[in-house]
Image (tube, rainbow, N blue to C red; front, side):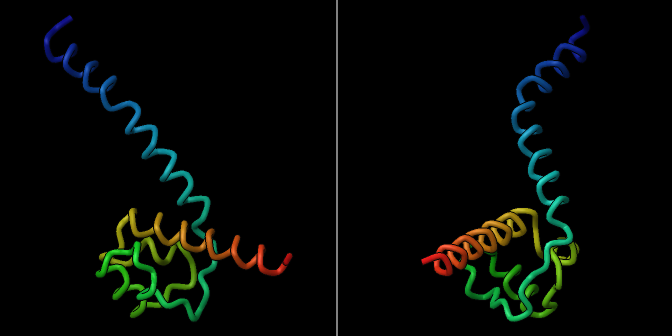
Amino acid sequence: MEDCEKEGVEIEIKYSGYIKRQEKQIEHTSRQEHRKLPIHLDYGSIETLSMEAREKLNQVKPLTIGQATRIGGVNPADINALLFYLETASRLTTAQQSS
């Protein structure tokens, strides 16, 4: 095996876990693409979003996660934070309604 091939295989093995995790995140986000966002959501209050994402999301007021992903300055980590926030808020609302 040539050195280049050997190095390529080593890199692939070394980063395979990271790549799989990224692929799962991409798959999860794409399944959420049509998820609606609350119209009056105050993105400024979501502390896990970057400051730039808070500003951009409050300006644009996207209707879906898919629209939010296409806003310049909103990165994949921000989308994951937004999805986590929405899921947590949804669970809290469900728990309060069942009490």
